[in-house]
Amino acid sequence: MSRSRTAVLAALALVAGASGTALAVVPGDPGLAAIPCSVDYKVQNDWGTGFTTAVTVTNNSTAKSSWSVKWAYAGTQKVTNAWNAKVTQSGTAVTAANESYNGTLATGGSVSFGFQGTYTGTNAIPTAFTLDGVTCNVDSGTGGPTDPGTPTDPGTPSAKVDNPYAGAKVYVNPEWSAKAAAETGGSRISNQPTGVWLDRIAAINGANGGMGLRAHLDAALAQKGSGEEVVQLVVYDLPGRDCSALASNGELGPTEIDKYKTQFIDPISTILADSKYAGLRIVTTIEIDSLPNLVTNTGSRATATPACDTMLANGNYVKGVGYALHKLGAIPNVYNYIDAGHHGWLGWDDNFAPSATLFKQAATAEGATVNDVHGFITNTANYSALKENNFTINDSVAGKSVRESKWVDWNRYVDELSYAQAFRTQLVSVGFNSGIGMLIDTSRNGWGGTARPTGPGATTSVDTYVNGGRYDRRIHIGNWCNQSGAGLGERPKTAPATGIDAYVWMKPPGESDGSSSAISNDEGKGFDRMCDPTYTGNPRNGNSMSGALPNAPLSGHWFSAQFQQLMQNAYPPL
Image 1: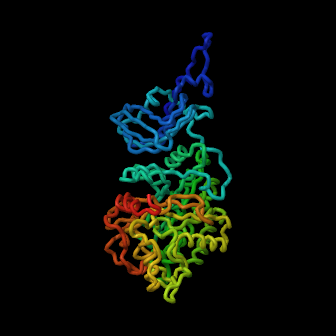
Image 2: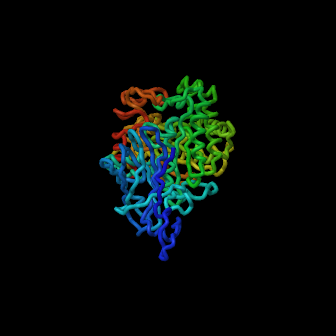
Image 3: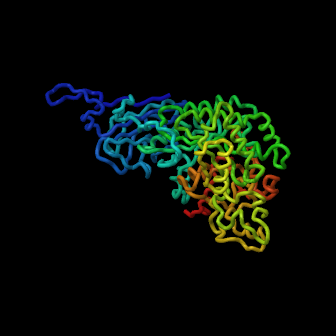
């Protein structure tokens, strides 16, 4: 449902000219100079007790370096959260002021923001608005090309670029940004771009009162302005999701592939294909943790689980990923990146090449081709260090290779950068396009603070050498849940190294990996002992302590203690 305030008094009324002749003032006519500002207030979604709204303000007077828009409600409407503006409310009176990044408002320029609200009874649209105390007329909502209330032009669709991050801003999720800014010291990073997680069907339209996909894309258009803008989405709801961990289990059963296609991927595809969003560069991270599980946690391996054996046998991970690639890859401005685990998962010889082969199988299933794959992402929601500077895989100590150390354990890689670059080469060798790029999630792999080594470890043995020098301070590289001592890593950065499209914060810092004790919920999320700080482990983490923080909420929920730790241990430091 979409409703708009529909009176542009100066644009639609007849005004008297000098000779007394009635003149129609039309949009684009110099007569518009008499209109100091216009406001287009559109209710985009209304479900009877709540609503989302998009507001576009056009300034026809002197250019501004900051702005404030005010209106009053006639009913019980209450604003609950907002994006691209600081919205406050006192009684029925509402004030929306600029954020730090959108205060400039040129003569003839427009700015857009949005918000979500609740109400009882009726949701009448406000009848009067002011911009910095000056009364505005309200746009007709016709959306003509010179209509003063037309929202920011999304831009002309362009051919796909080699690196979508090059020359572009990246969307700052206002919901995450508000939570980060509310934390002590959080304003230092609250303007960083993070991924938007579509982790269940309800997330498409907005779960638990949160922003839905269209609301995020609309907010991205407002942030975009006249430049290029990347929006980062995590597509994450496969049937039988994450078969090796309970904390991130999903809502769909192992056989519900048709529901995944028709109720999850198809609606996302329809929204992303809307021409309104054609000027955005939409980066999709496709189904983290899925395909790697089919390689490492099946069959006769000690790490195998019955759930992963089921997903290997029924083929629904491969089918689901293939279908998502096919549907989303058909949209010209969508860039698909498949999850490729991390070096502490797929870096061993018996995992490395088989994973690339399996990824090729998925990328050619359900109508997909390798042309639907723009690249791969590593370390999503994980803690593996970006670059270990105090030792290399080629070092030897006391006659033993670093590969023989307990920490490295015969892996071919010691950090994410070397793994991502090597895995890219492997992927090309099995048939992926030579132009594919890699993303590395650096949201939680900084490992700074007082525990960060300043040089190599003692050469007493290969273990003292590696353990004394490694930045990654986890007890075991297989530990993945709310890790104690972790810090923010490299800030998001474009083209930081050969073959790497960007360092990204795909996992929003401060969002829990899983609850440290059982919590009843309707999100399909189970209690995983790897999130319990008292757990002594299993074969997937060498039967080690979990290293998890205590008092953690459900996965995806805000975890203030973790956020504070990540800032404290950030490297580079904040």
